[in-house]
Length: 156
Length: 315
Image (tube, rainbow over all chains, first blue to last red; front, top):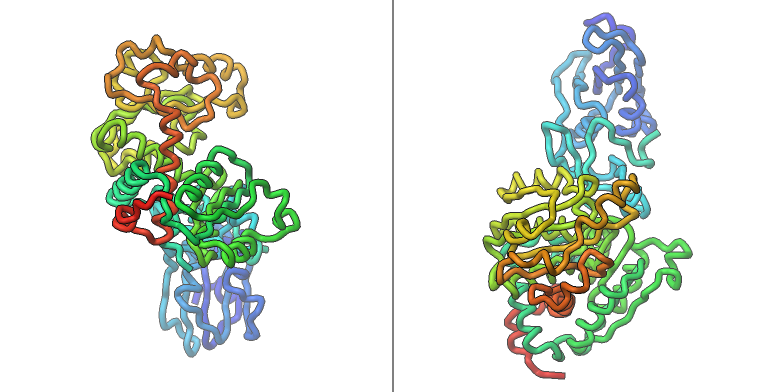
């Protein structure tokens, strides 16, 4: 086990979300709704990482997420690694993939878009996976994935 | 919910659907006054004023025998009290069979079509779409050229903000057009539409000069207004404002079949001496809006071309 991971207690069963860019940590927390969990959640913030400089890690005890839930992370942190833990062992490693349709997560950056003026969910389609371009399905404006803002319901 | 019957954007319409609506518009032009929509109620909800579009839709509904309800000024509605668009749509859908909506926010028509139990016709949503304008443009092109395929179309003026030229460009992708973009640098066709052209195999050329030699290439000359308020640099506006004015003298090399279109209102971009030229078509074009909108309303209410052909009873 790597030294950094030891800085956060190991879990018996659950999910480890590693290699989170530190400035995205709290967005990841709110995207997965971790603040509503009743089980133990351990957060390591600003840990040294050879690959990333500083990274963050989250260990969620006794909780497995659906692929759909985990894939929402790709909007803010596409390069996280996910480890599924059973009996203190990593039984599966996963990467997140960007869904082709993203509902209710990303805020449209067009102030004249209906989604910013009506209590409703946003809906974006990934129009260019390589360039990371999202298109609002209401006003049809495009925006790059790298500087998306999250809708107020989940952003912090 | 019936979003598939709504008329929200031109971008999704197939070649067949466009030609089908044009066939329907032709039927309405032959017999504009009918009782096809007798006992139907059309609601026209104009969250921003647009007299021209509203009159055209209301005339279309009236000439088909429908009754019209609605508002022309949002100040008189509950939206000023903070009512959501959804609530207004749900309320009106209790009364009307179809909702024709103009809204100042982009994407409002798409959202209305998702929440509305009755079909929604987009009569313009902010800077986004104005698909009934595009239908009447297509109908005008078809009527004057006898076809939509293989045409040379000059788009002149404000190609950056002009939603009519963007929608026309997208709708024409089925018909192998060649576009010529003629605009000042500040109002040039945005890159995303040039990418769209390349992705869909649409040929285009860009010009900054607007003269008889360029006009000689055109089957359709589509003029738009260069608006002062679009310029960040007013010096630039002063420099270009008179460059994109069409005058009768510029038409001496024009093809015989060439027609001049303009979504109206015009200010000074078409000189008045063009009005009597046989190439001028913009006033007839506006009348075509009536037939195009009769077709759109009938189609979203589920009437087929056959229904229209069998309904020639004059009111």
